[in-house]
Image (cartoon, rainbow, N blue to C red; front, side):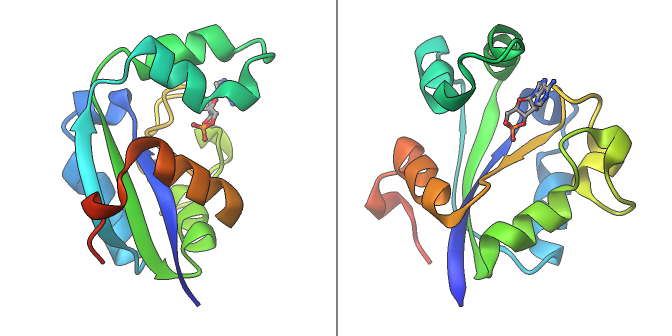
Length: 139
Ligand code: CMP
């Protein structure tokens, strides 16, 4: 089925002018960008987005990193979008990421790993709603 997922192009990638290169990988994987905006996240926004990780030792560094520069938040649509996106992103740690994936090609570290993608359809809905109004998404 055609479904949607949520993606973030992280500050390490926007800083290196890789927005287009990352988006090309997503499109080549069969995903369509049906919403996109470049934003500077606030600390509160980043803390809310990553609330599930708030007890993790890396939480404060993660929030600091995510507000260290602009990000591009996107809604992606395609056949089995959550899995298609996760496959093209590659493993969280770029050292473990497969050849040809976004993180293998572009990520700098487990923290500066260039992209975020929803891990389930349920979370995709929550994450899309966190950043987008319905009329900002045009399929
Ligand atoms: P993301 O998919 O955005 O969700 C949580 C993020 O925490 C993850 O990608 C990583 O970039 C980041 N992170 C930083 N350190 C770690 C770590 N030690 N283990 C897992 N995730 C980490």
